[in-house]
Each structure stands twice: as structure tokens, then as C-alpha cells.
Image 1 (spheres, rainbow, N blue to C red):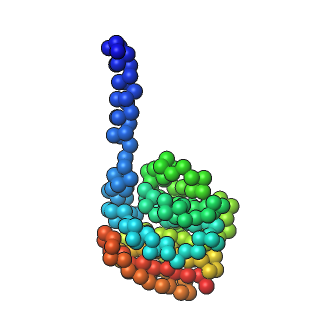
Image 2: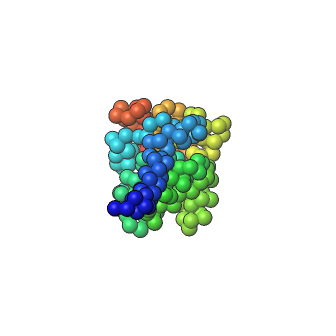
Image 3: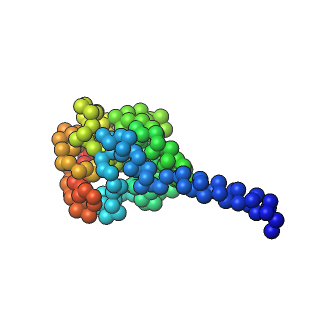
Length: 209
């Protein structure tokens, strides 16, 4: 093969290798998001598969038309939710970090996913903008205990407003203080714990009766 042809072929290959090196892995993207916004990211390590399955276990997927996720990060929960949802359901993922939203839009080619840069406190307006009056389930891993004053209360109140009767607010935390935020707004709250996670997490299922 002539040397000029070899150089021509090597060029695209070299660019592809450079592009691959520049493309952040989910773990690197998650770590970068934590370092940039530590108050809004609950843990430096994504949730374990055991925690994910336990957290999503009570969801009635057959009746779910809208699922909302707060703080999706790199999609640790987003992917399993999409796998379990019906073909006509929608998942609205809300994150204040635009880097995570861009990553989700690029990494997940699924028309059921709507990735939004915004605040969970504005969930009512966000779902309304996309044609919904209520959500069946809302999932959150946001660290309520470290959020700025008043934000946790606003999120809990807004979530109670959008969850339909019979639906639930699913929360996984590394501090049980979130109970104080959600208790005034939900009639029935079930609690669990998962050791197989770093760090171990407290789980809440807050139901709208």
C-alpha cells in the first residue's frame, strides 16, 4: 500500500481514537457533575442495581403514563425506568445541571424520554408545558438535607401537587431528614433501607391517597 494512502487511512482512525478518548464515560460524567455541583448531587458514586430494583419495585408500570425523575445525572435510574415503562408512556427527567441533560439527550435515543434543564420546584409548570396535568410517579435522589433553605420544602409541596391520587413520590436518600419535608404533604409513607449501596441509603415511598 502506498505511503500516501496509508496516511489517508490513518487520519480518520486517529481522529476516531481521539474522539473516543474525549467522550466522557458515565462514571466520569457523574464525578464531574458532583465536583461542579456537590450540593445538588447526593453521592459521588451512582446507585447500585439492588437499590434501583428495590426503589422501583412498587411501581405499577401498566398504569404509568408519566414518570418524572428529579436529578437523573447520567441515567443510572433513567435507563431502568425506560426499560420498564410501556411504549406509550413518557419519562420527564429534570436536572439543574445542563451537562447531565446534554449527556442524557446524547446517550439515550428514546422518544419517550424528555430531558429538561430546570428545577424540580417547577415540576408543575414543566409537565404542563409538555401536555400533562399530573404524574403517576415521581422519583428523587436529590439530597434534601443539603439543598438551599426553602428549596426542599418547595420541591415536596410541588411534587404533592402533581402526583395523582394513588400515585407516589419515591425518594432515596443518605440522610433520613427528607421525611420531615415529605410528611406534611403525603398521607401514607412507607420506609425501607438498602445496605448494598455506597453509601447505604434510606428509601421512602410516599403515597397520595
